Image (tube, rainbow, N blue to C red; front, side, top):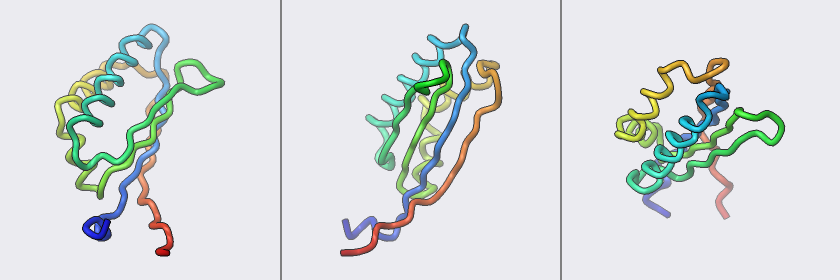
Length: 109
């Protein structure tokens, strides 16, 4: 809509590599984070995640927020704090890979 034309879409792609013995705990934590994000945050546009088709325990995420401020608000939420707590407990086989970018606007019609 007209009111959003000044706010760019702030996006991120994340790859996570989870230890087998932490798998169930990880999935539970992420489901909680996704649910909290999608049901309580006004600035979230998209929060999608899934497991690699070829590599077990490799998970891919795509998230979109209204502006970088929308993402910053996400990082202040209780469900994100719970995720940070899990992420700091050494659950990964290698470091998370995170890429931030701004979506290009579609050409106006």
